[in-house]
View 1 (cartoon, rainbow, N blue to C red):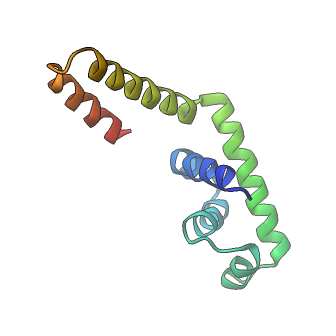
View 2 (cartoon, rainbow, N blue to C red; view 1 turned 180 degrees about the horizontal axis):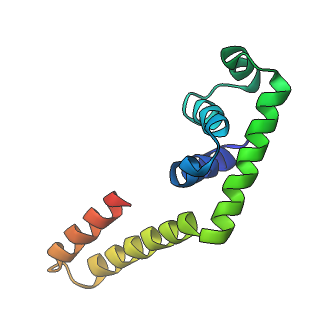
Length: 111
């Protein structure tokens, strides 16, 4: 899995992970957060490598479907980009707007 795809699924798992089955959530948590491979997961969980592979594939599919329906990650990224753009614009147009920039920084950090 490429870094961009790994990062995307990490974000989706953070948002929608609690909606997965217990097994899928456990496998994805260890796969994404502990960076364990399928063979390592199979050994750790006492399951076959194929079962782990299937659980990961199914979880990834479900996470993608949830994002297609809800757009939470997409909207979150868009809001962060817009706030970052607004901050840049404020810096360029008026240095006296430091309080606005601080507020935007706080919102960006929350996101």
